[in-house]
Structure formats: structure tokens, C-alpha cells
Length: 157
Image (cartoon, rainbow, N blue to C red; front, side, top):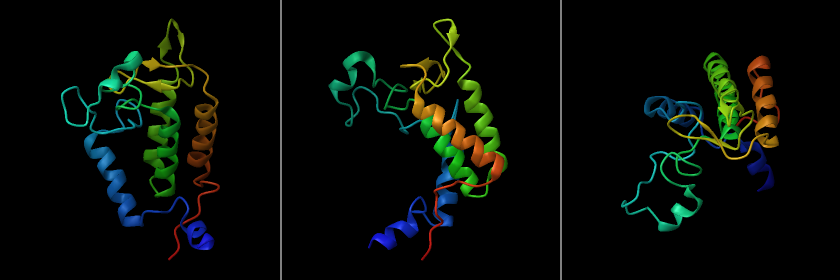
């Protein structure tokens, strides 16, 4: 079992499924204004899936935090997934777009590697200087530059 899992790590979807997923992200704009919003579609007050506790700290309103907010470290994974899928040119464009988001101002200063961004406006939110986002930025840069995603094995079987 361990070898079966290992051989499919980060290759859970077939190439056809991968293409469908990445095409869907483009079609519905999950990668805009920056890659990528972590929930689509967002959940709105009054909808069956809405829970009143989403209001706590005003974090999970639509397009915020886990409810359609943009998490840069997830965006960097998306960039790497594009490279892995053979979409290196698109990955480079998405990398540049998300890198620009890290220069957006928060409280008058660059928001560099913010925890999350507003899902519609791209405004930097949460804490700055998130190591997970910075580390994944470096990984995504390497992936786009080299065309390789170290540690991601191709699906076999």
C-alpha cells in the first residue's frame, strides 16, 4: 500500500482530470484577481451552507479568509501544478501576477507574503511575512524557471 500511495503522490488526478481541473479554474476565474481563491463559489449569509459562526472576527464573510479568500501559498502550489501539467508559460504569468500581489500595500507598507488576500479586491489581509508563503514562492519560482517540481512524483499506474 505504501508504494501505491508513493507512486501517486501529487499525481492523484490523471492527466485528463488535471487538464479539466486547471481548465475549470480558468473558466470560472478562481485564479482572479490573483491565484487562487480557496473556496468557489463562496458561501453567503442565508444560504443553506452558511453558519453564523462564520461571522466571528469577520473572517469568513464571502471572499474572505477560508470563504473565497486568496491564500498565496495555495497560489504558489497552483503555479507548480501548472508547471507539472506542462503549462509552463501560463505558470509564469500566474507567478508574476501573484508576485505582484505581494507588493500591494497594507497599512501603507508592502504586504509581502501576507497570510491571505481579499478574494475580490486582492487587498492584503491577515499577518505579513508568512514563511509558508515565502517558501512556496521560492518553490514556484524554481518550478517555473527549471520546468520541474522536485518532490512531486508523476502518477504511475
